[in-house]
Image 1 (cartoon, rainbow, N blue to C red):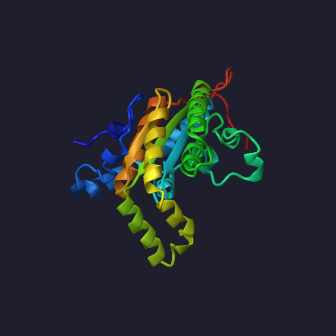
Image 2 (image 1 turned 90 degrees about the vertical axis):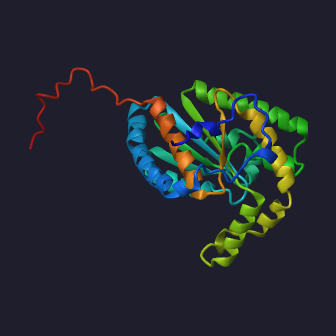
Image 3 (image 1 turned 180 degrees about the vertical axis):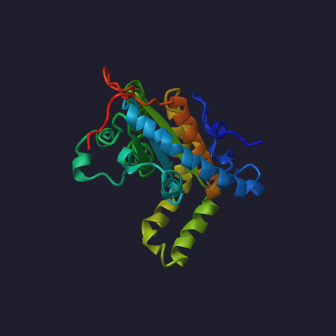
Length: 273
């Protein structure tokens, strides 16, 4: 029996225990080929649902991808989002804030990137950087982080109340798996462009990131915007769970094609030569 991706959803009020989370979970590892085939079928089903969402033009979907370095955000975008029509999907990568962005409140640059009606937006990193990286590096105090998480919950509530479904994925990998992926980047000439010496600096803060991740996921998994904590050591399983959850979400939204314009008799209209 296929295991539902919904068991990876963090129920509101849950205290996340990072030290007890199995990042290598994948169900039955012998089912790898079957899950890869399932993912292909699921990805193909996203396109017609996106078309209906775009045509309906009343609601939108925001997909948030968070992970530590090498966690697989780019891989999910490449493997799961590839069937989406670029006309109705926008991917935004949030990097170090620019001077202009630093002169605004921390959600300013994020609010500008949320999806318009009918659109799907994908965040490669997000506003959660401002309660994770900033906290780990001591740029904000614990009290600042608590206030920001309160603002984030309210911000996402605003989005949901405005017709945007918020789908949040945290892709969790082990420290050993990160080491393997970083080494693979060094060993492959075609992947070295992705390596940065800063990756090694950030890796030294692994324990602090684990604590911050657990705190943030516990405080910001809400009824209106719950987190999905995805075991991501196995890329094929990560892709399957994200794809399944996206498909289930879009099916649940059940977007409809709008009705034909009033007064138009399509049976009698003929296009002139």
